[in-house]
Image (cartoon, rainbow, N blue to C red):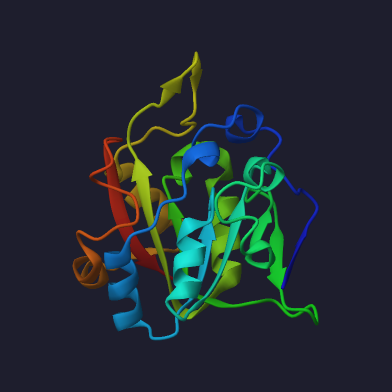
Length: 211
């Protein structure tokens, strides 16, 4: 497995220039994994904004296939969390620019599920469509995008890490404009077992959508 990208890090992003979440997060949730494998046995999952790679490692341990992409190379450079353990499954790239995850023969990899936990609010509003284009490019037919999005600012050391601070209704409308639809039936399947989301103190909501 390899990544093809002309932008190996998100050099514009505070998450790269002044690492915060990417330097501390490596979240896992056994309840989410259990429900995911009930829905999709042997799931293939791509985690965007994977930070320390905890979710990717947990999916692999549970018998699925997983890869992660982060916009910062902090965890790789510092050999943090899961990066030295599963280096062949964790990659860096600016997810606002085109990238492809490929097998060793150069064939685009396809995933049943793409996740992004507390990631989209870090993306400037004009670039959200580009991120969702990358999601769509890597999703199998009938694949799911599962995420959580914070609805408030995140100030730390004089910097605001959240570039797009919008309420849930705005996000639903924007994602619908980009061709995505809510899946309340599958939301009920996972709720309240989200990897990150409503209970993490960031005024977040979780979302399950598909094309």
